[in-house]
Length: 418
Ligand code: ADP
Ligand code: ASP
Ligand code: MG
Image (cartoon, rainbow, N blue to C red; front, side, top):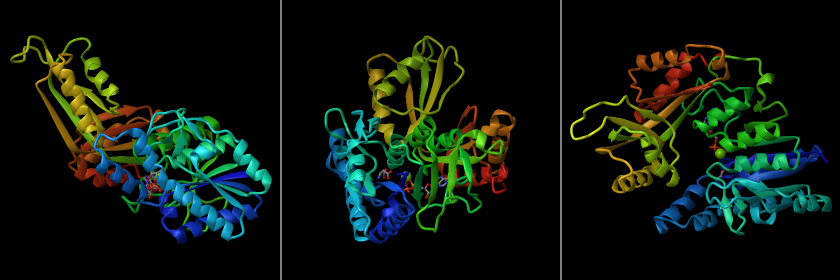
């Protein structure tokens, strides 16, 4: 029997009516002759509420208990979806992560898949069940405890199941009708893309476009999963939405195909760091040990003979997510107290955002960075940090200009036009 994976995000299962609407879409595929694995998120807002409860109860919480609490939102929607399908006459059964079992590493709150054995679900399909409704975002560690995959992780559950069960396609149903040139909430000029290359989607996702979790794109690319993003609120058919596919399958090759942003960035500067071999290791080693996701790094040219220092000094700046600032500060202060690094001051700016332009066309077309900088200059937006790779240019700017910057860049690269 051909098999489809259909994933419904938080807004698509936000209440009982929406669960019923999603169940209708599943039933239609069953009527077309598919066995279906449905992956559900928690109702929208639920995971945030659960995270809030954990943080209020325990400041430096036990990560295992965080996962035990936070994974529960998906259990509710999985059961409700199975019940709704049964009410519609579709034989369906729900599955929590441990029942499949979805085996993961024990890295709580950012676990990775180890294996997804097919036997249990296959046996149910053989019994005549048409739909397996699987709770997204969760798994089971080697120690037998509940794990979660990181925020947005149900996308990754969906792709992993599509790979494990050899699904014909993995359809990600969400509150937008596809992947756009930028977040359609930021500009009405955003244009829906019919296709996007894996590499571009990967870069957009990792730079903040939350329409797909980064890891889901990585897995789809590795296991050649046909991955599609489409609307759960509109009528859809085989041609709806955006297909994430190989570069070779795309005709368009503009220098820039999308603009992404990440709102919750912080910039930390170590002022007058003594500049000697091993200093970068001395700073970023403790940060890595503290689990800080350091992103952009800038080191200034060192200055000699700085007052009060016996050797040349420099300033070192890096960015990390806002919610990791407290931990980063502690790691650096501890390293300073232990004498592994020497610096005068630590300056934290939590009011910054990262805006990036992405495109595989950049490999062959020059001038993207200068066009980007000119567009930001025209809006009087100051650039604090710059980072580039083969297919992206990112800048750190004041958060209050983030939306303006996205709109200006969308215009500058004429992304509204195909
Ligand atoms: P779900 O709950 O279905 O997983 P998410 O909120 O995680 O949905 O992702 C969908 C959201 O991603 C959209 O509502 C949109 O605001 C945002 N988004 C950001 N960048 C893009 C983009 N380039 N294309 C489409 N949506 C985007
Ligand atoms: N419910 C989880 C979250 O909000 C996982 C997901 O929806 O993908 O992050
Ligand atoms: Mg999501």
